[in-house]
Image (tube, rainbow, N blue to C red; front, side):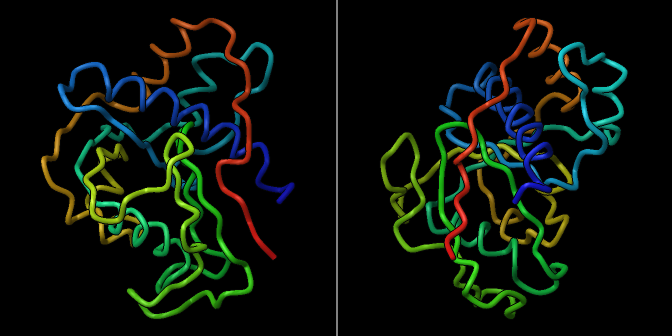
Amino acid sequence: MRAFAAPLLLAALLMGSSLAAAKAPSNKPITLSLIALNDFHGNILPPSGTFGQLFNVLPFNNNLVTMTLTGEQIRRLLEQQWEKPQPMGGRILSVSQGFSYAWDAQAPEGTAAGTGARIVPGSLQLQGVPLDMQKNYRVTVNNFMASGGDNFAILRDGRDVQTGEIDLVVAKIYLRARGVVKAPTEGRVTRQH
């Protein structure tokens, strides 16, 4: 887990900026934002990161895309982190503040698509409340993921899709408005076993 600490913190910061941006122009509340750890590169060096470093971290000019998914679709999305054809070790998603879940490292990885069982039942929570599998939630990802990229095919089933600003622009505005930004707390994604 130590090897992922810096990327997870950076991803959590980027999720905060995309969640804030997605809430602004929409009349529907946004509840969750996700990013794959391989969707950004490099690192921002504290305490005086530059916008040039930010560009190096987000070089793809991906637009933010907000969609409606059910709680069950969110659970399936999280299972897709470890299902075939993902690489061994999975393709880990970072999640925005207020959302948390646990996964079981003893459950098999590399299972056929649609058959994964690594997400701990009942562990998906939004603001400390268990996700309702039948309820609709607004979720923000980048346009690459929204199209099923990185083998997150369930995102192609999203409804009420809205395309927003480029992730780099959003992160730049977010950081400029806040000045110094504290590293987000960890513990959003918990590994069991």
